[in-house]
Each structure stands twice: as structure tokens, then as C-alpha cells.
Length: 399
Ligand code: NAI
Image 1: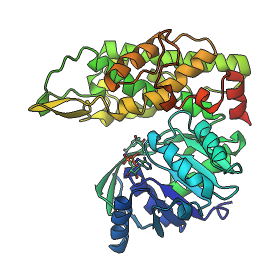
Image 2 (image 1 turned 60 degrees about the horizontal axis):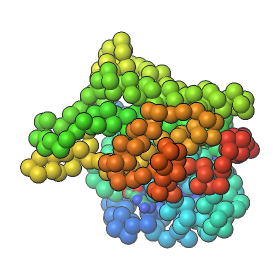
Image 3 (image 1 turned 90 degrees about the vertical axis):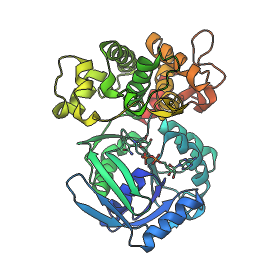
């Protein structure tokens, strides 16, 4: 099976791409790096000429590798047979559109992390852009690594790796096979999920990032912080903020339970924030007596602060941070729109979307509170891909 795909296109030139390239090269695969940005491509070329990217993990183990082909041309990248999108969710659409006319029938294409609704967007754009015969679309639940570029095109540091990562496919029956294949390519334990909805609704970033931003900043009135005054992000979670996240995640779990009740699909991976935190970080949590304490005493969150921008002689919150601009249109709004399909009320999610929209200048909700605001075209919700009922949505995930 592993002989089937030999030519892998890594799409995106950020932190994750730097980790993925040496891993793929260690498996002797042909690797194409595709970025639409000429400056990034030039820096990868320079790195390749100097011996490739060195990736160092937290135990000091090193891997080295350079892409065989570096290109800004989607036609060149389109020759690959397996595509791995490692980039922010807002870049998925432009990348899929650029690649679509050049993909060969049977190509496998996916994103890690997929965030919410990736499979619907990919299916819609690939068919619409003249590539109706894509083999399989896959969606990884989270990026397997915390990683940071040390020197662009040359060095990356892997700060930590997840024990396992969920993966769903469309069609759904290829999840096991693609999990094994990608697991071999990337040295990650991918766990097959039954339905892409498990990835979309189970995208926990949609709860914790906007939830903490809302909770910590809803009473912010323009203070300028000095560097040592920037509040901790995860470790700044109070009982009140924890309660907000709990309620948001309970609303999403209710949606998943309703889908299971109505259509019999397995969405047990869609879990509350409490379950997710203890399952994901059990060993690094010092005190799990409450959700707030579990966030505050999770060593993996040490040093992470509220995202900031320069403000006056100091700093203020960055309301354009991905915690809002990615996790709301590519997360919470997906869950909110599926909730509408099954008539589940989501007052806490609505409140966060509304307040955060005031910060980012986006109106996603209409006056009646439904997903019908003027900026809704930017959101990756089923309705934007012609899917208006839960039944059609669920059936798409099964077939
Ligand atoms: P990154 O911010 O380093 O990636 C940026 C890259 O995306 C750019 O270098 C560019 O090549 C590409 N890109 C940006 N705009 C584009 C566009 N319009 N069209 C095509 N390509 C475009 O992101 P990183 O760190 O590699 O992470 C990838 C994803 O994984 C993100 O969603 C991030 O939030 C998530 N993630 C990252 C973690 C990390 O430790 N780096 C940890 C957990 C999640």
C-alpha cells in the first residue's frame, strides 16, 4: 500500500511545513514544497542549497531533509499524487482553488489541522474548479506538533508531540487506510474517525480560543499593558471563564448527540472541554479539582500569554488574532449552523460570536440571532456549499 503514493506535495511554508519535510524525506518520498509566495520559495531554495531543514525534537533527536521540488506554480505542484495542506484555515480555499485544475484523478488531498468544514469546502471547490474525480479528502483533527521555525528554510524546533490525532476522510471508509499511511509518513499515531463531522464539531479550538478571549477580554476598556502585565492566556482561566467554555462545549455536544439520535451516526469523539483537557494533558496538569484549576496548572501552557499588538507605549489585546479570525469562521460558526439545522439553541456560542464580531468588525449573525449576517460568506458553514439540512450533511459524511 505504501508504494501507491510516492510524490507528496506539502502545501504551506510555515512552522508545520518545516517539520513535515524532513519526516517525509526520511521515508524516501519525493517531496514538492508548494507556496504561492516567491519570497518563501526563495528562502526554501537557499535552505536546500545549504543542506536542507534540520528538525530537532524535544529529546534532541535530529532529522534533516530538503524538498526535491520547490515551486510557486500550482501546475507543477499538481503533479503530486498526495497533498498535505499545513497552513491556517483561511489559506485552504485559495490553495484548493489554485491546485484544483491541475490535480490528477485519484489524488488524495487533506489538511492538518483541518479545523471545521474542510471536507465540504474541498469537495465543493475541487468539483467547481474542474477536478471532479479527486480520490479522497482527509481531515486531521489537530496539528500533531507544537513547533516553531528557528531559521526559515533551515531549522525548526518541535516543542512537543501529541500522543494521537483523529483523522476522518471523505469517503469515510478510507479513514483507516489513510491513517496508517499518514502515520507511517509522519511518525504520528492517527486514529481513524467515523465521520468528518467528528473533526468539525470536535474541533476544540473553537471553544477554548474564542471562549478564553471572550472571558478574559469582555470587560477590557483599552488599558495599555507593559510586557510584564500581559495576562496569561490558558493559565488566566478563572472559574467564570471555565464556566463559559463548559457551556459552549456542552452546546456542541448536544448538537452531536442530536445528530446521533436522529441519524444513528457515531460522534462520540465530540466531547466536553473538561474531557478533552484531562484526556489530552492529564499528566501535565497539577490540580484537576476544577476546570479552571486544570487550565491554570497545566504545565504545557506555561508562559503562553494573551495575543497582543503594540498599543501606545505598551501593548493591548490583538483582536485580529487567529484565536478569533480562524476559530470563529472556521469553527464556531460551523457548529452554530449545524445546531440551527437540528433546532438546538446555542446562547453561549451566540454571545461569543456577537461580542467577538464587535472586536473583529464582522457581523455573522442576523438580527434574529441566526447565521445570516452580512459577513457569512466568509464562514466555512455547510450552507455555503449548498447543504441546508442535517440529513444531507450526515449522509455526505457517511458516503
Ligand atoms: P504558519 O502561520 O507558520 O503558516 C503560515 C504559512 O501558510 C505561510 O508561510 C504560507 O506558506 C501559508 N499561507 C498563508 N497564507 C496563505 C495563502 N493565502 N495562500 C496559501 N498559503 C498561505 O502556521 P503553522 O504554524 O505552520 O501552523 C499550521 C496550522 O496549524 C495553523 O492553523 C496553526 O494555527 C495550527 N497549529 C500550529 C501549531 C504550531 O505549533 N505551529 C500548533 C497547533 C496548531
